[in-house]
Length: 202
Image (cartoon, rainbow, N blue to C red; front, side):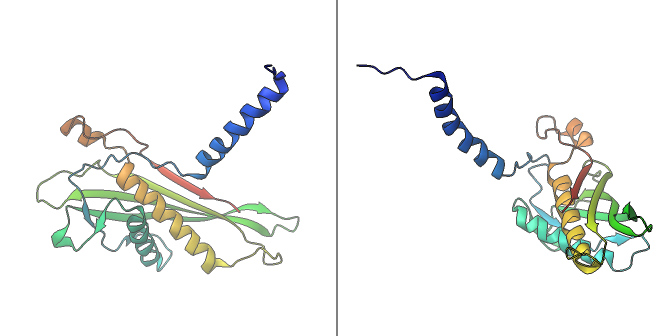
């Protein structure tokens, strides 16, 4: 004898099947499609040029960028003579700003913002930039109240900011928008977003 299940039973059964699938999909990061020309496999990343008033920032961000490129796995870091392309980055702005003040006008939450220009050039004299000059923007919002237990201090927050910048710059390098190269290599690239922003809050 066939037993017909009620609507609530059927709905719960369907939910039990669909929910784990959605949760698994949410746990896996979406990797943007590569738009960098496939001929570019080995890149050289020289020291970032720092035009901001924050000393030492170029060393932290260069290391973070190199680590993120290696972690992504789609490009190899090599010496300049062995590179298919050179990735040059210039830091334009470092802006610290208060996001929140307490009743005594004491800053309890701050945000750091880094703006940089990225140029990717083939390691061949006379070739144009790949994608022109693109903006890279990274931010870090953090608890600045030393009276709280969640205060971590500036060295820790600068490390997080550097990691954020490395991820944004790597995404722009590999999956950014290459309008200039689209005209030269039709069908090779596909569109991404030209300005990458990563903001971390805790």
